[in-house]
Amino acid sequence: MNFEDRTLDEISEHHKDNWNHIQKDLVRKSFPSIVYAIQYRTHAFNKAMDILGFNPAVVMSLCTSRETAENVIDNMLKKHKIAVEDWSDTDVDESRKGVYFYKNNEIAYFVSDITKEGNLIDNFIISTNVKL
Image (tube, rainbow, N blue to C red; front, side, top):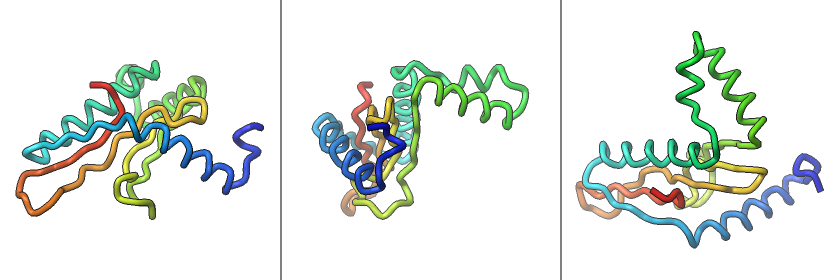
């Protein structure tokens, strides 16, 4: 069955199966400052895209405007069958909030939102299955 022909319930179930599959590969990292956590998260984004065979920074450097770059990037993502979704503002469990990278309609990589754990001043957490 084509992914576009599925019902929302079927897509939701497929996503849950994908999530359960990648969850065992998640590595949880703790950082002493938000700056280090942001740097790590950015590195994970870039590495995920590199592994998937796409580097948006190269495309952006070749374009003359933001609008052109966005259109070129969107077309290249479709060509490579890559989708990127930000689930930061959704009603899912806190541990599932973050950015999902899909390849051929399957979750390939996940990079969580940065969370703060406990009452410690400097304890910023990121979970990802990107091998860094």
